[in-house]
Figure 1 (cartoon, helix red, strand yellow):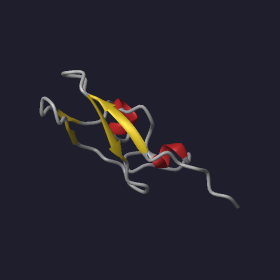
Figure 2 (cartoon, rainbow, N blue to C red):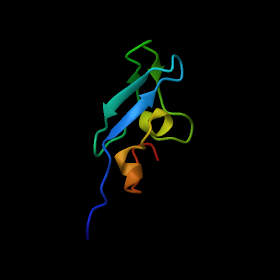
Figure 3 (cartoon, one colour):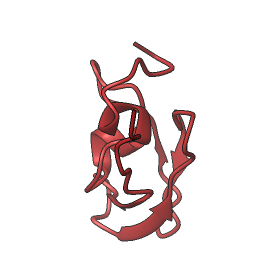
Length: 73
């Protein structure tokens, strides 16, 4: 069985200031908290999302990309 290719880079957009930052995602975990590098707002997932990448990123977290269970779901 071949494993599905996963994109490990996502750009997070801060909902407070609009700053966009490229981040490398962990392959096997969800990231629940993220501090904006521009305004220092503390971000956490929106209701129904497992991590900040699924809420604010251009690419969902690797578990979601592989259609696997996530840390929060």
